[in-house]
Amino acid sequence: MSRRPAGVPAQTATGDVPALRTATGLVVLAQSTYRTLQTNAAGGGATAVPLVRDLLSAAVVELGDARSALASATTGAGGRAQTVPDPAYGGVVDAALPTVRTPADVVGLVLTLEDVLAQTLVADAAGLSTPALRSLALRLGSDAAARKATLLVVNSLLSAGRADLVVAPPDLASLPGGVGTVGFPDTRFPTAKAAPPEEGN
Image (cartoon, rainbow, N blue to C red; front, side):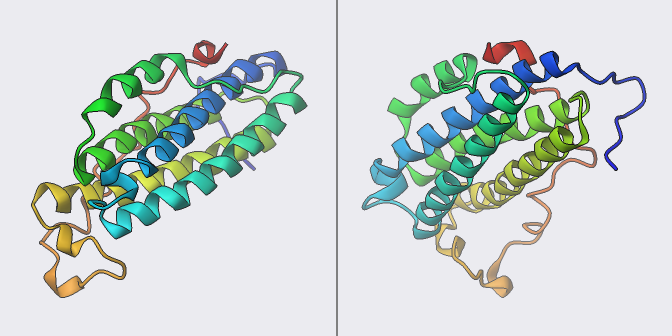
């Protein structure tokens, strides 16, 4: 049974809707950004790293599933499903997209979005009013955190000039020391960057 941390009150069913809509807005933005990056030479074109191209494709599918699940949860809670991108981070994406030139730029942009999405879903889970909604938020937050972890590893290799090591399966003998932990930098999952529930209204 899902349990809330001490001191974190459950939301009412009405309070669930803003949180779900905000999370959905972040998912809509992330999926849209991944799709746009697939059309960029560094994300899906001639200069793309094949594994990064594959990560973009997989994320589009996963985020589509997340969007559908959150929309269903929102309408089930009596609200209207969110269909537009998150307004706060939409500006960040709009400013960053014209500067994307390399695979590292691609990874850096989606890494920012996955980090915020994961933190938002984990933060939301503590206050949602039903076990089913808390379970959904934690599951989707875990998915975003897993994508974030993979992107952190890829980003570290690209930053070190080792795009040749960004392959699946990896050549374990050639990987730099410490790469196995770079995807998990936090001993306790952070929520400081979580979008506030009212952001999606």
